[in-house]
Amino acid sequence: MNATTIFCIAITLAAYLGVRRLYLRFRHPLLNVVALGAALIITALVVLRIPYSEYVPAKNIMTALLGPATVGLAVPLYRHRSLLLRSAPAILGSVALGAFLAMLTAGAIAKLGGMPQDVVASILPKGVTIPFAVEIAAIYKGIPALTAAFVVATGTLGSLLGGWLLTLARVRDPMARGLALGTVSHGQGTATALMEGEQQGAMAGLAMILAGIFTAGFAPLAVWMLGLG
Amino acid sequence: MTQTLKALGQLALLWAIYQGSSWFAAFTGLPIPGNVIGVILLFTLLSLGVLKLKHVELAADFLLKHLVFFFVPIAVGLMEWGGVFYDYGLTLLLAIVISAVLPLLAVGGLSQLLNKRRGA
Picture 1 (tube, rainbow over the protein chains, first blue to last red):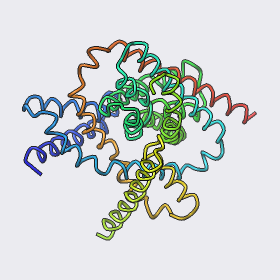
Picture 2: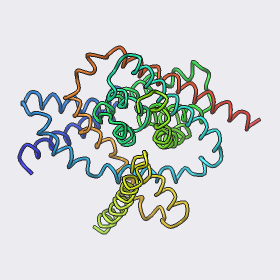
Picture 3: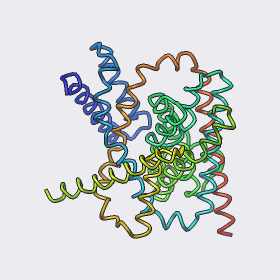
Picture 4: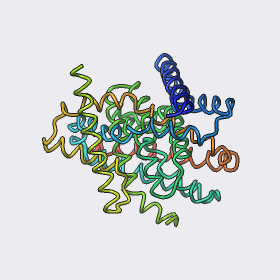
């Protein structure tokens, strides 16, 4: 491991811990750890004239545990299994619809807007949590960093406006609100739902994981319908 | 110390499930990511009682608490892709806003309706 790699890991840890602390203190959706953390690191790299290629080894070391961490999502899913079983048709039906609709509308608009195929593939899974989204995008030749950016943009939008939009549409049922926030804006929506209440938070967490699974399952169909294959 | 060792052992178990699932995905050519298969596999193992929560939760809870950390270095890759936002800014904005608002209302509306019908 050379000095640049060690330096890159150090600034990434510092940016993560710093922004996380700020977020935990103020809990505002715009204090997004991913977006703000990455912006700080990119600024540092640009100022110090370190090209992205020299950051890659550090990235590979730091993301080595992402796979096992993601598998760990089965733990909260299992903990909330009674919630899931009690209203399985409503939960599975609405999350499946939402996941499919999100993929199809995002892909269709991106395609109509004339974006290149790799960008369209990157935007398809942007409603689901980053580890799933990045892997799903990669299957269809998407770009992981772009997918991550779209995921964060969607999550921020959902956590800023989601609750307000649902109220406007007279969705008052706490379960429905949690499901909607988790399906559309993954972890960030789940954090917002948790602030509304425990039931909303649990539902959102459940919806976030299920949306990832449904999105992976429906992606071949969406890709075919959009003519990307 | 024993807690740390226990967490490391659990991490190895999660890693093995992830690797096994990734190999399965690669071997079968399924268009489903290994990590999605891994979640389904671990959930199944827990449901069948093959594994208990106490066999994985120490490591899983710690990793999930810091899950967001892994996304920071991935997002740094954006420094190579700034042009996309410049070239397709409006389309991207439309795509992201519409594809968030429509499903949000669809999921909220549908699940509220299904729930109400069940409750009635």
